[in-house]
Image (cartoon, rainbow, N blue to C red; front, side, top):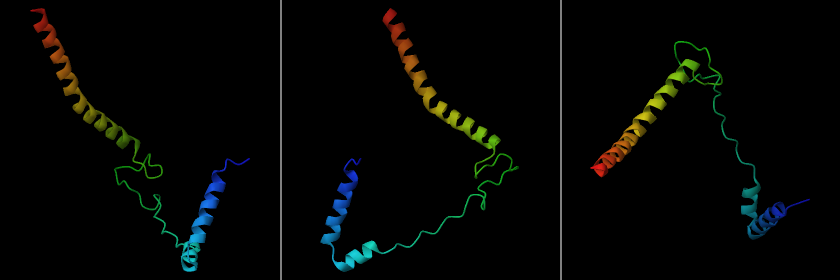
Length: 100
């Protein structure tokens, strides 16, 4: 059973091909050159740390991942803690002023 989408694309391509000249059709249907493949991660390791333990498919060692995770958490806290502190301080100042 077909949903009609494939037939629509086929009909669209036929309309485009009919509107093309023979030269355009030949260049459209000609094979395209393949892209050069990149060097695999196993051939060129991305990390040159003290140890190669834990490197799987070019990933850093587990101890490096832990350090990076802690560093990212600290950066996020540095961004959010002052905002939360300011909000809490303004709330308590408003509460204190309101009780006077």
